[in-house]
Figure 1 (cartoon, rainbow, N blue to C red):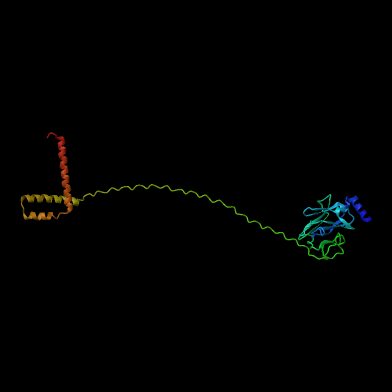
Figure 2 (figure 1 turned 60 degrees about the vertical axis):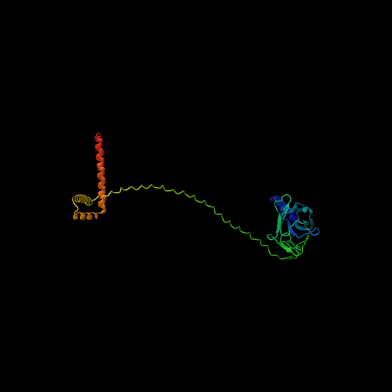
Length: 277
């Protein structure tokens, strides 16, 4: 014991290391299946010469337990922590009251911890005391050494794989519909009015004129012959006259009409210049 005190004193003098940081206080065992005051949750601390009253326990929910209330049996100090530790998993931290954010020791139990959650009749602890790894004991050794406890080999808890988030499919940005352009209405082109083609007035041919003259001569002769005598030749001419073409009759009518109009004009002109007669 003197040798340990000398070593701690030298560490403090030369390196500024306080004796409370000499890793002499460790979480050694715990029980998390308590249900009543007679059977509460509890934590055992392995203390090899430190001042237990300087420490406290803190869990995941920030519940605190002062170790000044611990019951010690040699190097083993236990404290009851009724309805504090979670059955499914939790974290127990050992800290100095003066530095609660700097854990000196901790144990995590559950599916992703240092040890799986012990059963209702089991406890978890270090083997050997204070320095060994965490194991499950078939029966607890509260307030005594773990070195004589019978532990149940348990597989190391395998952490659950963290699911990889599936990248979200980007939503396509809707494109604006193009504005339809107004189609230009073609200006109607005025069509030129068709020019009226004058109808040509047919000019009587020379043959027609000759026929008219012959007809007039024939009429003159016939009238002369009929006034002189009624000979058989006259009857023949009359018979021939009936066979004259309708064109000849039209021509004779036009000639007669023209002669009448000409005579009327001449008479009117004569009266104009000789009004007294």
